[in-house]
Length: 318
Picture 1 (cartoon, rainbow, N blue to C red):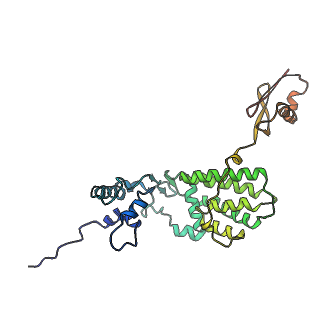
Picture 2 (cartoon, rainbow, N blue to C red; picture 1 turned 90 degrees about the vertical axis):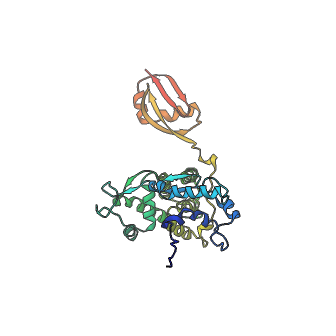
Picture 3 (cartoon, one colour; picture 1 turned 60 degrees about the vertical axis):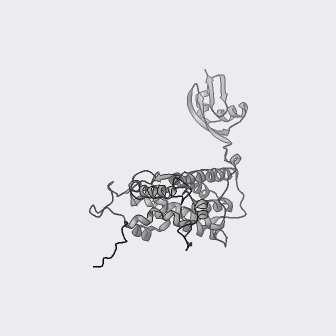
């Protein structure tokens, strides 16, 4: 009697255990991957997945890779250089989303109501990537306001307006922080910094084009539709996808002014904004000009003036 040999003996996910190798050489019709492609692309720099992957795909992919390495088919002993576990998004009730609990959020509904960019921004703004976080639809309004503000800035930008020192400093500080935060996958703090920057720009009477262009480039990986539209509104015909990532000047990130507390007999009575390296005479004049400081010095003799640049201003009076 004839028997058919069963050839489908592997689980469905067997193929997914080496897909990253095929990605390195997808058009190769002679072999699964070439040695040249494997050495050029692997190992994988970063693997992002939920905790459940640790005992499913990630574990088995590593088993397969170890075998392939022992057979001399791959050049690296490990398939992935870095692993980051993304936190789970819970329902609004703080429980794991499930149909039985009725707390499932359909992303399509959020996209239909607020747009894909708002969905992406809110997910990244909720908190650290690794943290477990409850979904709160009502808080999407905050990122929608940010989107609208960036769009409004693109309509106001004036190429002839001058770039002030404070705006230039905040622009370079923002580029520096967003660059570092994106590299660290700290998307929530990157968005927060861009919100601060956009609020500053919105308060300018004359809005230069350069800081708005930088903001469009910075926001584009997180809100690609918004970034692209703002870029076109600023007069660029070619997609910003071909633009280099903004660079910052470390020297221009340094704060030249500081806010210092002014003390009278050791008690804080006012605050002044002053250059970090201001001379003692300038610091004394600015501090003494404060109405509240004058009130506590009135009728008293200043016995001593203590000044440490950037740290202490104190009138000792009797």
